Length: 526
Ligand SMILES: Cc1cc2nc3c(=O)[nH]c(=O)nc-3n(C[C@H](O)[C@H](O)[C@H](O)COP(=O)(O)OP(=O)(O)OC[C@H]3O[C@@H](n4cnc5c(N)ncnc54)[C@H](O)[C@@H]3O)c2cc1C
View (cartoon, helix red, strand yellow):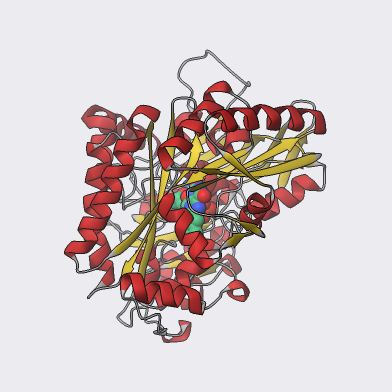
C-alpha cells in the first residue's frame, strides 16, 4: 500500500488526455501534475515515547515487533480519505503515532493495553489503514503518547465448520488473504467493498463495512456470528448461537465500535460454497427516479440478485464521456444499472429471470452482459483515478448516506445541491455524481462522488463543504454514514444521529470496558 496514495503503485495511472480535456472544459482544472515530497523527505513529529516505555513494550511483544522508525510510523499516520492524502503532500512537520507495535497473541494485546492504561498512552487499533473518516488518526487527547497497534499478525483461518457454514478468521487478514484461505477449502465470504484489497476482517467488523455483493450476502455485520475482543477490562467471546433471546445482543456493541471499546482479534463469519455459476446483465433506465423505483421493486419482491446498483444521469454521462462503449456495448445516456447473480445454475437462472422481469416491467432496457462484466472488471480501480485527479489539481472525494425509499429523492437532491453550492462558494464549479450502492426492502444508500477544482488550501476548502453536507444529510433524514463509519470526521453529527441519551449509553459502555479511556480517543463517541 502506498503511503501517500491508494493501493498498489504498479496500478497507478496518469490522467488520460480525454479526462484532462473533460476536466479543463467543465471544471477549469489544468491536470498538470504537481509532485508531492518523497517519503524520505517527509518530516514527522518526533516520537515522544520514553525509553522506559519502549523497553516495557519490547518486553511484551519482542523488540522486532516494535518500531519508532519514520518508515513504519508514516504509513500508519492516518487513513485514505482525500484530506488524508492531501495532508501527506505537506512539507510541514506531520503528526504520526509515536510507535508501532505488532502483537502476536491475545495475551500480548492484553499486556500492551494494561501497560498503556497504567502509563497513560493512547492505543489506536490498526487494520488495513483504509479508513476514510479519520478512524486511525493518531489523536493523543491528553495522553502522553499514542501507539498504533497493527493487527497484521492475526492472519490465520482458525476454523472452518462446513456443517454450520461458519469460519473463524483472524482480524488482521486482508480481504484477498481471507478469500484465498477460504477458496482453498471451496468456500467464500463474498465481502467485496471497494477497499477489499487492503482492508481487514477486523476493520470490516469495527466499521460495519458494506460490500458490493451485499444484496446477495448481506452487509459484513449481518455475516458476523461471533467476535473475540480484548478490552482493557477483560476478554469477551460473543455469539454462542445463530440466534438468541438471552438479552440484548452484545455483538452489536462491538460491530461498529471502531477500536474504541476493544481490539477485535477474531471474527466468526457465515461463509458459503464458492458459486458454481455467475450471470451478469446491465440495464438502462430513462432517469434516476424510474431506475430507483425498479431497484425498489426488485428488493421488495426479493427476486435475489447478488449485486444491484444504479448510477444517476451524471455518473452515467461521465462514464460515457470517458468511453462511448461500456464493455463493447454502445450506451446512450439515461441511467446505467448493473446486476450480478451467483449460486448454483438452476437457482441463478430462476433469480435472474425474476429480476429481469421486474426490471423490464419497471421500465428498464437490457444492455446485455458486457457492461456489467466491464463494471466488475474495473470495480477496484476508481481510487487510482482519485490519486491522479488530486495530483492534477482536482478535488475529488466520496461520501455516502442512506434513507428510506420515500425519502431517497429528497435526500439526493439536498446533498447534490449542497455540494454544488458549497463548492461554488469556494469559487469552484463541480461535477456531482451519485449511485445507489446498496438496497434494502425499506430503503437504500446513496454514494456520491464529487470532483471540483482545488482552490487555495484544499483541505480547508473540503472541510467547509463537508460540514455543509453533513448538516444537509441530517436535515433531510439521512444517516451520517451508511458504511464509512464515524471516526473523527463524522463525530460532530453523532449527537444528532443517536441523541443525547444514546451518547450517554456509549460513554457508559466505554467507561466499563476502557476505564482509562486509552482506546482510540477522539473517535466515534461525541
Ligand atoms: C478507496 C476506498 C474505498 C472504500 N470502499 C469501501 C466500501 O466499498 N465499503 C465500505 O464499507 N467501506 C469502504 N471504505 C472504507 C474502509 O475501507 C472501511 O471502513 C474498512 O472496513 C476499514 O478496514 P481497515 O482494515 O482498513 O480498517 P482501518 O482503516 O485500519 O481502521 C478503521 C477503524 O477500525 C478500527 N479497527 C481496525 N481493526 C480493528 C480491530 N482488529 N479491532 C478493533 N478495531 C479495529 C480502527 O481503530 C479504526 O477506528 C473504502 C475506503 C477507501 C480508501
